[in-house]
Image (tube, rainbow, N blue to C red; front, side):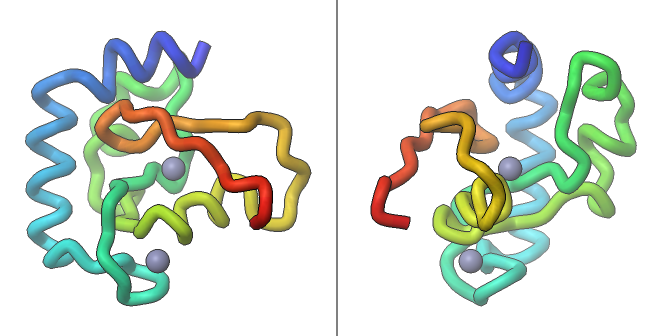
Length: 100
Ligand SMILES: [Zn+2]
Ligand SMILES: [Zn+2]
């Protein structure tokens, strides 16, 4: 399910433009640790039901620029790790180091 959103949403030119403008807005800085942001994360995760909602998909209030490691923590933090990978805002697969 998440995969089809990745294909339809994260590869869209609308998202690419939104992501780029958000990144420049935060000057490419991770909003949690001040490192180099690589991912624009959706605070409310996109689902089949909400990804067409502009305030969720593109609203600055729902976006957060994160570096790879903060993004991994956000998704896998202290909770159970059900998946071995996720995708970043550009649709690239991110694998998680087992050491973390
Ligand atoms: Zn960070
Ligand atoms: Zn995320």
